[in-house]
Image (cartoon, rainbow, N blue to C red):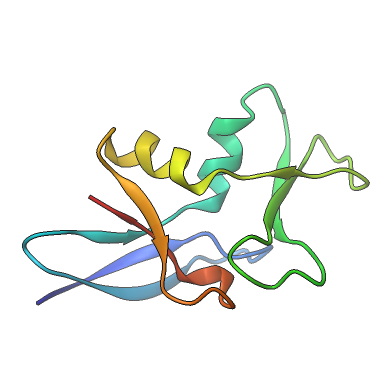
Length: 107
């Protein structure tokens, strides 16, 4: 198996987090940029912040605030981000439902 280093967009950190993802020759698994998901899914926003919703620390907890409005948040479509970043045949998955950082794109 090949090992590669990828960057995941962690919640509210200034520095990226690097993790190792293993891949086989049949399928490649790479991390998902939740920042890019917010940026490309809501292009009209001039500012956005990615975060994990309080009390929802699992794979469905990711959301983003747009234009400094803290009272409302929008959901992120991880499958859509994988297709945007890696092509129409890419899909999304996660290794641990209770770990929001376990999302990956597979292609």
